Amino acid sequence: MQIATLGINYKCADVSLREKIAKCLAVAHDFPHVMLSTCNRFEIYFSTPDLAGTHSELLGILKESIEGEFEHKLYAYFDTDCFVHLAKVTAGLDSAMRGETEIQGQVKIAYEKALLAKTASLELHFLFQKALHLAKHVRTTMPLSGDLLKEVVMELCRPYKGKKILFIGLSEINRPLIRACKKDAEVFLMNRSSEKALLFAREEGIYSVPWGSFKGYDVLVFGTSAGKWLMRAPDIDGQGLILDLSVPRNVDPSLSHLVSLINIDQINAIAASKSQAIHPREELVAALSLRYIEAFRKRRAAKLQFSDEVLIG
Image 1 (cartoon, rainbow, N blue to C red):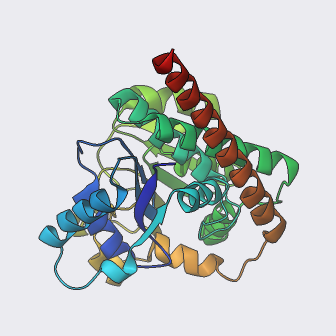
Image 2 (cartoon, rainbow, N blue to C red):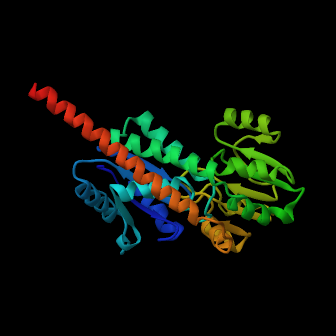
Image 3 (cartoon, one colour):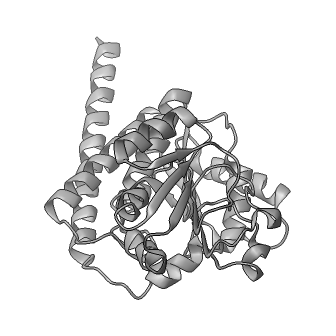
């Protein structure tokens, strides 16, 4: 398969470098590609006749914009390794909070964006469709109890039971957290698209507020794709806790000396001690990945043989 990925994640670099990589590569490219950007990773999947050349082209873009040495913090996977990597990512096996479920929705959204932009090749269609199908199968046959992201956030918010929590952004990472927190707190949602926020708020029985001030709430949870700081020093008004789950970050990091500010990397560190039974899942993902790849190769070979026969005839 002519597929590859170049990426960086929480294992390789802190949130600051991940922000820079995402900003540099999250632009239009003239080759088939799908971009996966989450709070813990940025990966660009591509399919070209010259995978090594495209990989070098992407590195060149980064070197033009980012100072210092960073190449050793990037990773790349080609062909079969690329398929297995995306399968593990989609199944939550490469996440900081292993076994988490949000990543599957984020992979699906990345693929759907590529469909709308018409940037996915036949190989990339196969890669993402099968990775999503595989992840669903693994979760169904080998379910894990609990969700680490929700567990950590709930632990952090527990001292604010009955208080006001404002979620900024109707993202995949925020939706399950809203559902979890509304049981013990007064939950509000702020989103740039007020229509979507109103609809979701009605369905979940929470409050929707207009985009604007962050004052008057005990806890703020940022989870947007804004790509810039949404909160600075003038917005501080007695908040007890601010969780910034976004990459690029939504909250000016310097505010940490004024308020309890926790970013996604710090949440990952809190979750590091939490373990789940992962190894059987990894074995199943690896086995199914190889089976899918072999099926693709046989299908491609059959089509090529048919084409040759038509030409000869």
